[in-house]
Length: 63
Image 1: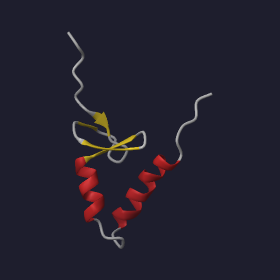
Image 2: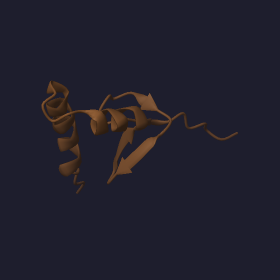
Image 3: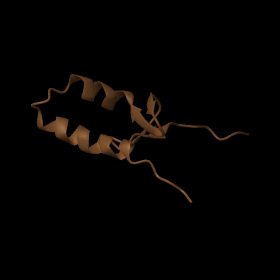
Image 4: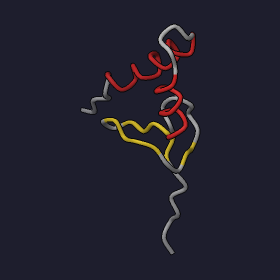
């Protein structure tokens, strides 16, 4: 029997989710993606999303 994949860990909410998008090597769940799209730049949550997305711009380098 194969292992059942129940999802991936979202870099925003850090929860295991079944659907979302991949941005480079990172995964963003559908709920967080929708939240980012609907958040106004004046909303305090906007800064939270920006901070979480900074993880994407610094990929891990393995030597």
